Image 1 (cartoon, rainbow, N blue to C red):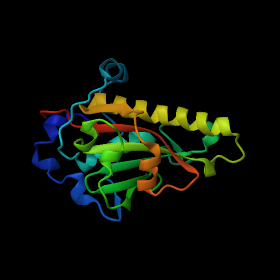
Image 2 (image 1 turned 90 degrees about the horizontal axis):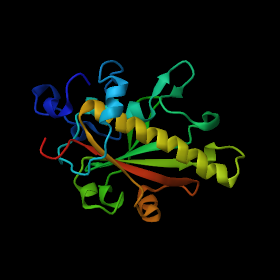
Image 3 (image 1 turned 60 degrees about the vertical axis):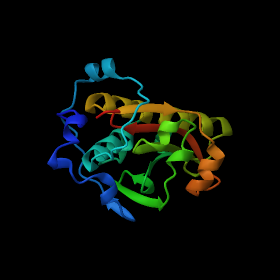
Length: 214
């Protein structure tokens, strides 16, 4: 995160891009947990951007991005960068790319292939979702929430997903990426294409990529 991603994208150091790395289960590079912009500067630069380059994200960038969203920052306890009510960790991050749909598994820090199909167009109603390299899909799993009531099964994941969304916004501001969170999505159609279980529910989606013209 020490240099803007737009500058990194053209260098030989990141010639190996994420889609070329992905298989049924692919470890991600170790996330960089130092550097980047100071928090207050990232907050000042946090913004929504709906114009994306179609260029794939470098593997290191994807690693850092997913760790920021839901990575484990305290290995001794397995707790994450984002809060979770009663530590249910009930929200998963799925990654929709041109190569398919992948599940981020924080404990192993890997991407697991779920569907080998480009589902980006189902993650929202705007045209840019089909062009941007990455659409994050935040999915709640009521099966992890014990005997909580129906209201809590809606509220807890909404709060957890909101924290993940903001972490992605701050990482994007620090790394020179474009991002936008989106609630306009056909959850039923997307959930069916993702092969979600009845206990799982799409909470919200977020598009991430290099800014257009990068």
